[in-house]
Length: 183
Length: 183
Image (cartoon, rainbow over all chains, first blue to last red; front, side):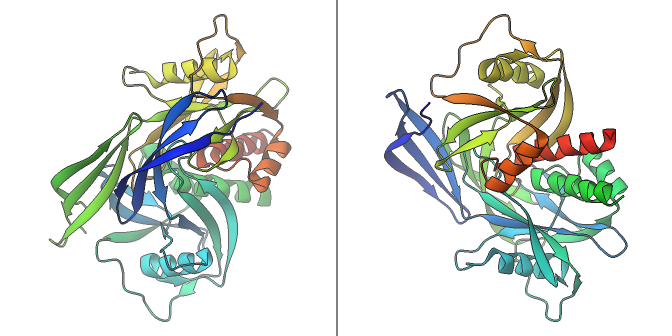
């Protein structure tokens, strides 16, 4: 079976600071034409941070698209000039939680919304976190606090809906998997 | 600490069939102004289907935003006229894998990309799947096949990158959690 679609034309709709929007016309495997609405994004990183006393670090912040406060693991966009996503993760950890990891392991590499967006996210596990020696300036439009939760508390916050995004639920579930395998 | 942003104005950028794009001007907690780029989406469902012989059902399809073939769990958009997301899940299961669940349990409720999109996804676990008595017509622009994988095979496909989206990795990790708890 043939699955591929063939690009006929691309119409630029919008160029923002974070996203670009395009309308594509494609040729389907059966020869028919179809339209695709696509959001282009430069990609992002997210980081699982577990403290020595077995708590995960979350960032509490306002999410304008959702009109609500959320608890999410530290994360951020890969800037246009950043070629190494681990460096993005180290920068975001400094800006958001003021911690420096000794090393980062890649835990997952995924697209957040493959139906309409190309945003790719790399999720890392941070080892041996220490306070940063030099604090980077925080984004001028970000207002956030950090919150530390045990696994049991984090699972309660998923049920309560304060933890409500895919990467953060993934991080909690992966943490639970690691704990179960260890026990 | 105050986190909330206050909406000053909304500019409509694009109204597609699947997404709507808006630019918001907001007042930050410190009184400054900032711009927010927001993709509006009507929401979606995804379904974990595990067969009697312990295989999960995936859909193989082309994803134009990613320019690649993926393996994902069955999923689909909530249509404007659909008020009950369980009915959306039953419709999508019929269209994509020709199966009818006896019941559906909500496993997770999350936003896929809270930084720029309001897409909310409800993930269900399907119980007692049976072939449908009446096949619904498939979407004219969807070309897909189903693939069944054991947990070990599914984890290999995550490593190989064919399973590469957040909801599907979540489904495989949750499946592993359920198996570990059972053993």
